[in-house]
Length: 359
Image 1 (cartoon, rainbow, N blue to C red):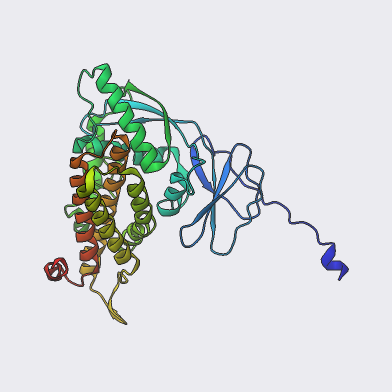
Image 2: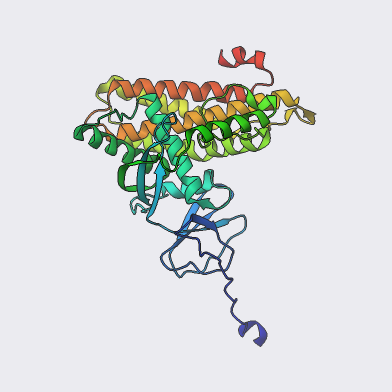
């Protein structure tokens, strides 16, 4: 009896976090360690739900939870807005500022859905760069030569909202820089060709632009890519629906009905993702051929790319003043249609079934 009353307290576990706030934004934290000064802890359970602990708190990890130590920054990185012009750069200074009004921070959702291990500054900068390049290539952001002050201010407002909506980071400063002294385009092309030649033929099939850093290639692992994409869709689609419902300001009854229809279709896509069949099975105890597994995984990744476009669209909707423009409703309809198509193709057993799924 007395032995249970006079137990020694648990000794805090040492958390090696010297790189946190320098070369790393978030590091996996062991259980029973103390949150370092100036940092926060983000804990994620199996269902993707997150909770935060402040500095000095002991990280009591529950069953099935993972913990990260997060330093808010600030951080600085150099981005290349145009892949064909690596000497033109933008020096971005950003920080991770939690929003006290939000029930779940956007960066916490990023950790839950996309982070597999430590989040380094360089790797995170590559993800930011890929998102920026995609928006510039699509014409959603404009950075013309000899940019005027008005054009630069519009670009700054767009990139600020994009980074906050997509990743939960606040851009403190963004200035043009010349990266010609540190970037050798010829060597970058040689490295890209060498990496492409080393890949198997299955990995060289035409694919949409992914979130990999420009110029890098890696072998396509169907199981890993499918699991990563489906986890993102499962966790982020409900958040996209909630943000869309709050951000859109319909003008008139027709746009309101259009918004309701978009939300209904997104809800069905989310339901489809939540009941998605296993990648490797065509029926119980019946394996699916490797080629069809590869096809399914590619559709999952394309759906994740459409999800990225949905976050970028939300950033543009939040920038719009007054009623939401009709063009953004059309863009939302296109993105939801892509999500429906790719989710239906992911469920199909064979490629010829795609027409039946669409019907």
